[in-house]
Length: 330
Image (tube, rainbow, N blue to C red):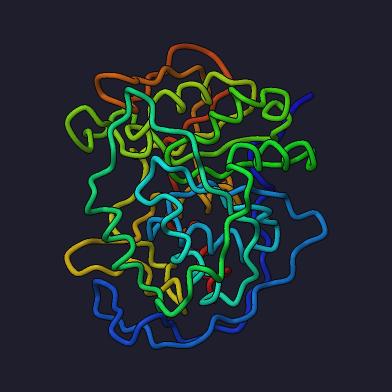
């Protein structure tokens, strides 16, 4: 049976624009100030909204992507899973509590990853996780106890949801540790997934660090290789086609202030582009094939090896993506 890799193109009714906000002092690189205020109500979910698990390491660009998926009418976020191998592990659930409160959104089930990093993985720099907490751009008034993760580990929750939903898809915004754990520990459930889209790896861009082509892949490279070789359709958004700088469409209450750190452009397109492509695949050009993943020397380096069905994004339309962001974040 032919599976669909991404959602149908975006059709979103525009809602009333609201003055952007998160923190009185938050501003973008052009000096635009984001005034505090609530987000406009999200559009109603469509009857055919696709169930999605968002696998995230809770960096500011991840939160922007999660906000897009939560508010998009064609997406039903049925769970959030947090691997222990990303920038933040489930110690960041207090951040999620603040995030859902700021969005005035009911949290879906949140599950913590328990799968350790493989021997070939390289841990994210420790100060990145601290920065994601200290410079989230969210009002930190929430009590971490307001959001209690479910008792099931992340891979078990994904497997359970795959058995429940025939068209479940995974949007992976961090290391693929837990997604690959589903493949290994629950293969029949994994085979029921309708697709995985992941921001990971690099084809030709410069390496992010010595031995790390791209950090989401480098933090745990073997799981990426396993998912790429697995039975479920995969779309990879590598580092190469992502435009520099922050998206123009990332403005508005809450999202307009995420991760605004002086001297550092964040959130950039990264994971937000992945979420944008998921809901509007026409914004991406892809190359299909079989792809090898370097897991030891330049971790996350991608190389096309022949004909196949794995899609790797080679070009993006930033203007189209910005329209997606504006239509959802207003």
